Image 1 (tube, rainbow, N blue to C red):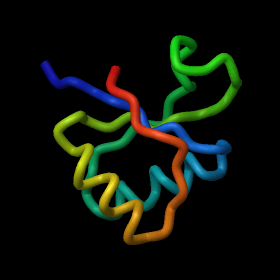
Image 2 (image 1 turned 45 degrees about the horizontal axis):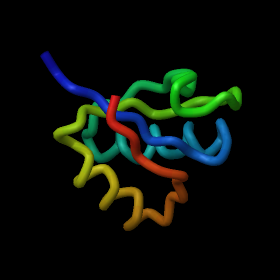
Image 3 (image 1 turned 90 degrees about the vertical axis):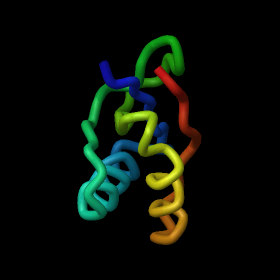
Length: 73
């Protein structure tokens, strides 16, 4: 079974951009609601496989995509 984590962003627009950049780089993503145990704010997060964490964060940095943080699920 795959283990997942989420990338939290500052807005839904940032989450959509994050998802698009990662998908173009070949990383499997899914836009999901922010899990309640991570934030009470409404919004979206990007779910990725934990094994893709380092690659994803590197791609986001290279593309100047701002994120709040990564959290394992």
